[in-house]
Length: 162
Image (cartoon, rainbow, N blue to C red; front, side, top):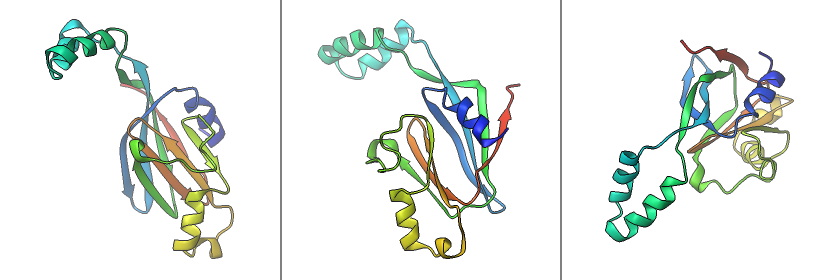
């Protein structure tokens, strides 16, 4: 699958889930999943609401009745493999302050030629002195923001559910 096809496919997702981020033989590999709206039953709601005590628990239960969990969609799975990269970071999404190049974009996966992340790498590495075409790849997942700087787009494998 080409990177352009991957962007079109994955950016149709509202949320992504990163299952695994690992390095293997100089490559960076990221397992990504799409998500689906889950369901909660009365037992789930009562258990969660019970953690907040009686008074607040009733309010929490009412709120939960009109909401739904976000579950992993096993049928929407991609392996993203950067065969070489300059750097990567994983940030807890709760603490991400945004990057000027990607802040206004709302797709799960975005790219940029000029960004705060690349500015940081220009100061802390010599990669920009020896390579051209370095891009910032940002993958926004539930719980994580993954930033990768690389000179080539990743190789994408769409994995079929068993």
